[in-house]
Image 1 (cartoon, rainbow, N blue to C red):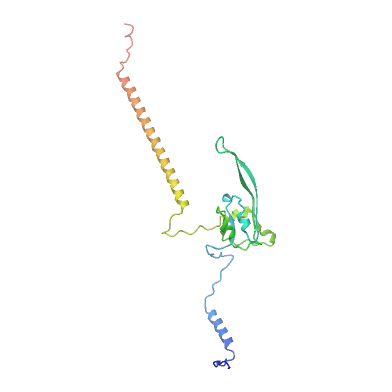
Image 2 (cartoon, rainbow, N blue to C red; image 1 turned 180 degrees about the horizontal axis):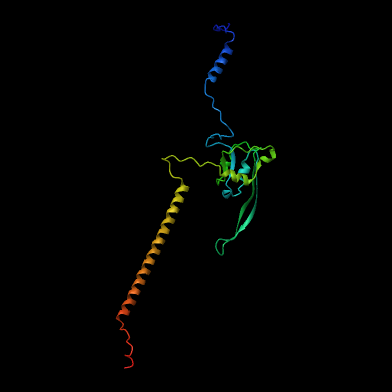
Amino acid sequence: MAEYLPPTRPRIPGSGLAKGLAVTLRTMTRKTVTEQYPDVQPELPPRTRGVIGLFEENCTVCMLCARECPDWCIYIDSHKETVPPAAPGGRERSRNVLDRFAIDFSLCMYCGICIEVCPFDALFWSPEFEYAETDIRELTHERDKLREWMWTVPAPPALDPGAEEPKELAAARKTAEKLAATQQAEQAQQAQQAGQAGLAEQAGQAEQAGSGERAEPHRPGEGNA
């Protein structure tokens, strides 16, 4: 049994060309918006994935970012140093010291896995994107350059007004309040001691002045009489 097909309208020759020209005419009447790059820098979204910045102080050389990188584009070198005991009789400890941290951006696919798996917040996304090179070998940037990009990392977005205060901020705030209270107590104690010393000094001066007034003046010639 043959399938029934609805009749189709005959196509007018040149209708597709007319539709295309209509789109062109509508676009021609609109105001053009051209970004004058590089004279004017573009406004990038806050979560733009440009390059990866390194906060070296937080890196513990755990190698987790290098192991999880699917492109193996992170190179890390380190050595161990012995830390003397903090108290007499304690044990010496060893710690990892970072020697090299480099990222080959010719291999990086900007997946962000290294940033997500870092347990110590040592890697961050930077919106910096002007790092093109004429030689592909120069796209391997060392930790000094990654450190410079760290200062271009935007501040984190503000929390919801109804959200709970982060535990880290709460602990830091309590520590700061406790330190401020201790300093105020020490200042008050020092002021009290200074006041007591001043009163004692005034009392001593008054006593000396009183004893001087009670003493009779020595008259010349009285001792020889």
